[in-house]
Length: 174
Image (tube, rainbow, N blue to C red; front, side, top):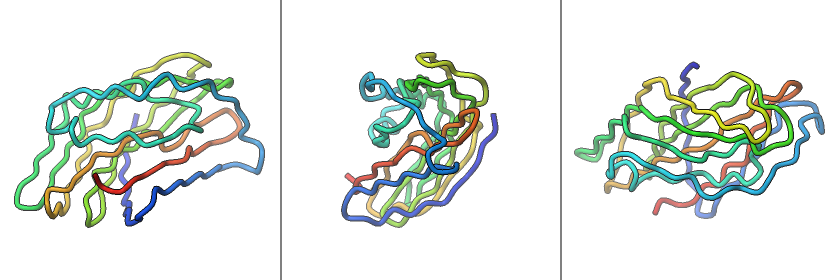
């Protein structure tokens, strides 16, 4: 597993849907089963209250549970600090074996956001469940008015012949 960081700014009044297929058109084909239910989120209450799972109905992999128990989140003087320490249980809901995936976590405020993520590599057969652990990354930034959300979801999924990036439905800050 390896960690990575990304910068992402969300400034939309309406939900945003993005979908990227990183392969020749039509190569990354798969069918998905019905989603189980929204992911269960556990951890410190000050983190859980801010967590917002991304809407990803087209994702071949779904997040079943996210445990932010080892996460450090501090908010003071209109600044935030986030050190990830999460474990995520995922399930392959596609009809094809998955060979890897990337998770993304964005700490978002009205002034922008800072992103963290982690990768998992290995074969995940259709219907199979795996546990992914983060690699202690850090994010910090401005948080005017205490408006901070922690968004999480699937960044991309690798199949044998292609890589698929699910849509990421985002909403306004609560």
